[in-house]
Image (tube, rainbow, N blue to C red; front, side):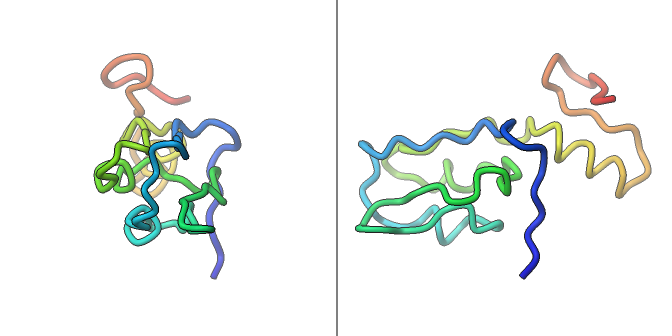
Length: 99
């Protein structure tokens, strides 16, 4: 399966391994296979594949995952390209242009 990588090293995704209880929910809900389970602990294996949807953080009962869902400039740029509209990400205020 081909995986789309967004802009390198810009994702807000963070994982606190001390809080992880090993439930594996992040692996189940992530649409881009950013996580894997190893030794009963979640690990980020594809940080640049994260689209900042927030599903992992919303489903982490222990609060081990944080991500600023919906603020991804890469997602805004891609959405703008796909819909032929001006991309906005909101990273500097509502409606701010990414270009």
